Image 1 (cartoon, rainbow, N blue to C red):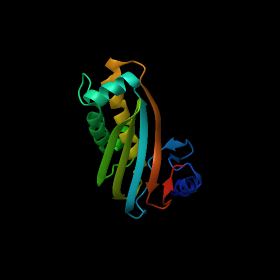
Image 2 (cartoon, one colour):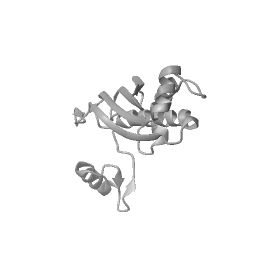
Image 3 (cartoon, rainbow, N blue to C red):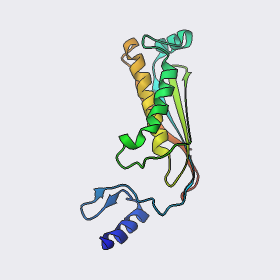
Length: 170
């Protein structure tokens, strides 16, 4: 077992930090020796709802299932807190702040999530999960008004903290 430990450390230093052993089995990364630092991440998702649905949302604020943007925002917050239950190699984290915004931009809904915690590992997956589930919620709440809705982009916008420091999408 001790021999595999040094091999795992070499693999982690190169790229494949979530693989271990000869069978290349997936595993959680050991963060026991890492310092606690403030971690932040922002992610976004875009949902193309189309002109007709966007006009309804703009004029009424809701569809048959209720307030779409507020429900999506709340779903994103709930999702961020459940990330470790959904994604096998994510560490459970105590999140200090979760903010999710959903706003109309023409025929699109733009969702942005911002997550903060003091921890030993980053919150990128929590931010991405929040944005993804908020986008799926927009789809669910709008699908009765139109079947051509598309979730177009999900991406990390920015992250900071930890050994790798600050990164921002171009």
